Image (cartoon, rainbow, N blue to C red; front, side, top):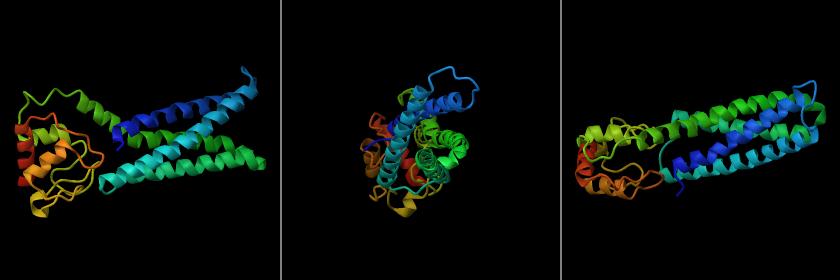
Length: 229
């Protein structure tokens, strides 16, 4: 199953394609004199647009697959991200249709392109930007050995970017509050036991990254912390 980090990296070329479209559009329509061959700029702009539109559809399908596999509910940030992504696809489709079939409305192409670029930046920031920043912070942490092995400290360092420990609300992954009272793990639906929590850390269910390299004592402490709440 594709991970959120890989999906985020796969989203980055869309930003480059968006910049290419913006620059070529400004060169074509924003300058009184042409510095480059207009026909070539137009071909570059159209090719970048088609690739970006297709790639956005692919990334959207991957997002749906990850959300479905994770079993978690969508966060408010995820809902806004989904809304901006849908609006982006709709605006790009309208822009393409106007440019190809409705030339009398061609004056709308430039504002639609600018709004689409802003939506693209917003969509990437809400998803890839946030997730890659969180992943980078995790990658820069020292190994678990030598750190304080209390479950709460480990949760803050290893899990808090994606999960709440004190409530059931979804963050990036499902909330882990009240596991002892609920009796089941939210994604896998296994019994909420120390063994099953450790199994989830070693071989995650859904899109969660593995933490098999954590010392057994740290896994025990983390499981005990979650089951105490």
